[in-house]
Image (cartoon, one colour):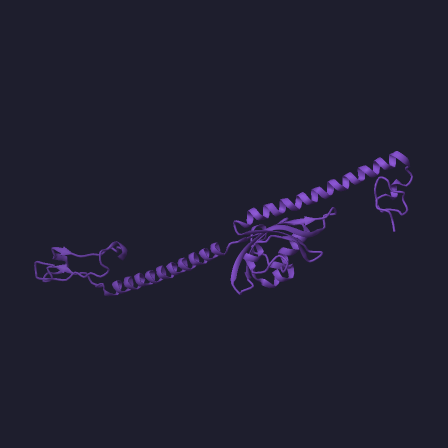
Length: 258
């Protein structure tokens, strides 16, 4: 069995990280090994702190119906997903997988630079690097069959060569907002239909009014020729909306009254 890597190792075996140290001997080798161990320890602390920071950030966001996640498309797993995913979907962190999430998705509305693009085209642009940020409103079916809306905002993760391999994002529960938007859209459509009906009624009233108007104008008194009359009527069109009533008529009461 090979001896663990440390400053006092006698090198019974060759450690993968120490092969470049073989030409060195004595104190220099021990110092470099010690520095290497210190570097490994510091990297380990950084990873632990990063995980703690993500967890703290996630906890703060989840108070506002939000969940942080880190998705790896190579391994097809969530490397991290916040505990709030259970309240949002009905599935716990140990159950949630990208495959499960995709099966829960009913529809997706791309936003921002990806607005209007079909889902496959949007994914293709993100993976190529044409777009770095993903924003979409997604309707999901929860574990108990409830329909909910979630806003998915994420940024691409790439390796040193620029290859896309995952995403770091946040899921926001926007169900209340979407329901309000749908109610507003329904009310707006109802008002539009009512206005259309009212306009059709006004147009019909105007046509009836025109049909009922006399084609020959009355003169007064009627017992004399038009050229000798004291009063002659003409017309001027005024839209019905500006009148107190849509229908009116002028008729003779007597030889001296109209």
